Image (cartoon, rainbow, N blue to C red; front, side, top):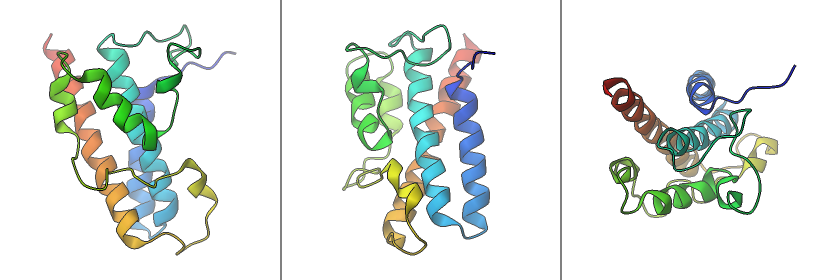
Length: 148
């Protein structure tokens, strides 16, 4: 049976799991899931706005036209802002955290392999806070689509 991708559902589920792990002290794994959640939020919004067409399976298709969007949150964060610049979705880009360094700077999908206490608590806090802030973009987008 083929898999059907749903970035909206994945974003919500991943952040809920991340929050539970964070509360239990498993911060590295929590931040890994939170980063994946934020990535799903941004992909969901891009698809929902029609800026990217989802494939038949719901996933952003591969290929040269979408290569810049088939990346993880550390790179997708800036791509998302660039995609929305000057468009009707700029309100979503404006909701994103504007910290220096950028909110997901240094976050790597490979951090899922690190041992406990190898990442600084400052970075872990920044990445978790950023994922929670990005989740609000999805909440706003869903409210907007329901109102239409």
